[in-house]
Length: 229
Length: 229
DNA sequence: CGAGATAATAGAACGCTGTTCGATTTAGCG
DNA sequence: CGCTAAATCGAACAGCGTTCTATTATCTCG
Image (tube, rainbow over all chains, first blue to last red):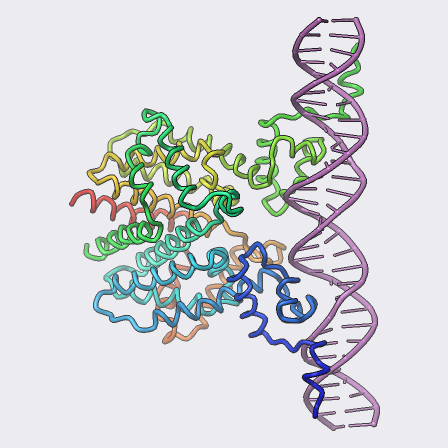
C-alpha cells in the first residue's frame, strides 16, 4: 500500500478554491473578528506561509471571498420574469441585501477591487440591465443604478454592524437592548426631539428587513417617476 | 519665578476635550490607518496610559470623535428656510454627505452608540422634523428618514473608501486609475455586459458628489410622491 | 500648613495580529 | 535518476490595542 495518506497529514495540499471557500466558512462560523491567517491556516491543516502563496494580502483574500459568495446571489437572480423592469430590479436588490445581512463582511468588500471580483461586476450589470429597459438617458440610468447599489450596500452595512458590547457578551438580549434604546429616546425632551417622540412606537416595533424594503420602494418609486416623465 | 513651565513638559495635562479634538486632528491629517494610541499620545505629549484614563476603548474614542465632528454639521444646518420640507431635508442630507466624504472614518461610527453621540441624535431628529411636515403616517415618516440616512451614509462610505494600493503609493494618479477602470470595462464582452457598455461614457466623466445628489433626488422624489398621494 | 486621600500621568509589558523570509519538501520532466 | 520549479512550512519581526503598577500632582480638611 502507499503510505501517502497514512504518513502524510504532515503536509497539506491546498488550492485557491480550498483557501477561499474555507475562508468563507471561517467567516460564516466565527465572524470577521475571529478571521485570522492563523485560524484559517490551522483550519486548512496548513501553515500561515502557505496561505500567502495563494494570496498576497488579507484584503485580497477578502475580495476573493466576497466574490465567491456572490456566485449564490448571481444564481438566485438568474431567472427574472421580466414583466416589470422595476420589479426585477427590486428582486436583485433584495437578494443582494439579504446576502449582506447574513454576511456583514460583504458590505466592506463588495466591488472594492473589480479586477478580482468578476461576479460583483456581473451582478452590477444584471441590475443595470433592468434599469436600461426604462426610458432614461444613459446618464440617468447610471445614476439610478448607482443609487440603488449605494442604498442596498449602505443600509445592509448599517443593519449588520456589530451589536453593542453588552449584547455580544450575552449580558443582555437584543430585544432588551432595543427596549433600552426606546426607553432612552422616551426620556429625551419632546421639545428638543419632536421627531424621535413622533416615531417612538414605530421604532419599538420595527423590523430591519421590512424597513429596508420600504426605503427601497421609495427609491424605486422615484426612479419610475423619472422614467415616466 | 516658578519653574513650573520650565521644569514641566515632563508631565502633560490632558482633558476629554483635548484628547478628542486631537484625535480628530490626527485622523484628519494622517487617516485612520495611522490613527494609533501611540501616535495620539505622542501628539499630546503624553503616555498611552493617560489616554486610557479618559476613554476605555478605541471604539469609544472614535464614537466621541465622530460626535465631536458632527457639531459642525449641526451648526451648518441650524437655519433652514423652511419653504419646502423636502428641500430642507435635502440640505441636511447634503451637508452630512459632504462631512463624511471629507472624513471617511465618520461613516463607520455615525449613530453607532447613541449614548455617546448626542449630536448624531440631534441631527437625525433635525432631518426627521422636516419629513414630519409631510403628510405621512408615523411609520412612513420613520421609514423615509431611515432610508435617507442609510442612503447618505452608505453612498458616502462607498465613495470615501480607501483608493487602491497603487494609487495610495502614488504609482498612478487617481485620474489614471479611473481611465484604467474604463478601459477595463470597455474590454469586456458587450453581450455579457450590455449595461456597462451602455453607461461607459457616463462612468468615464462622472463626479461622485454630483452622482450622489442625483440619487438623493430620486429618493426624495419617491418620498414626495408618497406624501402627495 | 501639612499629611493623607484621590485624581492623573506614565511607560513597560502582554498577547495578538498581518506579513516576511529562508529552509525544506514535493512534484514534474528530460 | 537527478534537477528544477512549485509548494509548504513555521519561526521571527514589527506594530497594534490594552492592562497594570508605580509614580506624581492636586485637593481636602483638621
